[in-house]
Image (cartoon, rainbow, N blue to C red; front, side):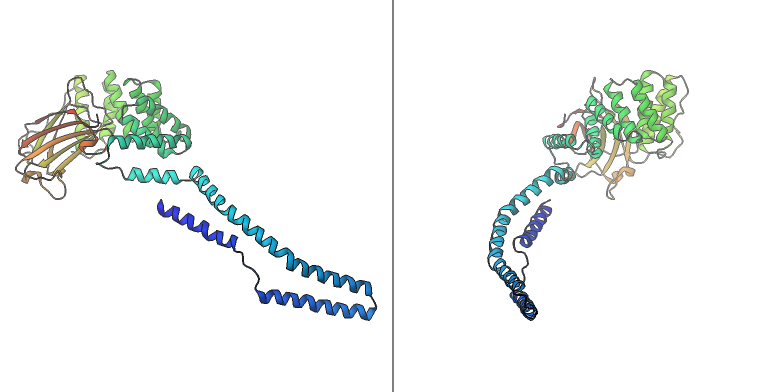
Length: 397
């Protein structure tokens, strides 16, 4: 941004030099012009004398006199007036152009983009709120900027401000009515704003999203959750099976979807396949069970980070990390070497600290977590006995 401003000022000054000091004809050119006028006069005089035209001769003499008078008297006054007006006008033109660009150009957008890129784990909640407030103000001036509207929509859902999110996505749909992602987010916002009730509008938006993109994950997950909570377990199973087909077999997301599918099947009285007890022995790792305090509901849009750190190291760098999106607590899963980071091995660590962070905006770190949990002195093993992690309010609560 600073480089851009300096370049603009330089261009204004450079162009001003041509305006204030225009290129003039050299002295030799002026002399050649005077000589040409005088030669023309002498030739014309000879022609008129030979023809006895004294009146025309006097007219030619007067024309030459007028040319010389305009050249000697008129031009200096015009040059001085022009130079005085230009010095006064140039800074006003530069200032007006700068103000016009700042109001109609993209200077504010560039500044906001730089601030968004600068967000990190060290950013405080107050800085985040101020940035969102500035984005809101800019969005009012630029209602056609869908990037701002999309950013605000996800933020509102993360902050559980579902009414604002709903209106935000409705505005976006007026611009792009057939965008599958926006249709799905609009359905999600409507569902939450209505108190987790599948209204006609929420269902219509989700079905429109699936008509555009049959693999729209947000729409499939929301419809499965909505029908499950309404007691229509068969419909929930249908949507969750479509969602499961897109997940990598054996992944955490696949296991989570499979667990809710089993829950829906049990509600219908169907048999659920038991895990294969003849499988290979479990790899060395940690089984973690995360629970929320009684009466507390974790938003499905929140991000849950589960990480393990070495208890003997002063570094807070995780050895293993698992990120889960939209989970329903309580949740039980396993951390092992598949989740290790930077070539480290959880199975080779004697003792670890297991930490859980629940973030509304998807950023890791305790400063961004609205719910936290931690258990120290955990030894990785092949046993499947879960470590209980109970969440408590975090810094961003």
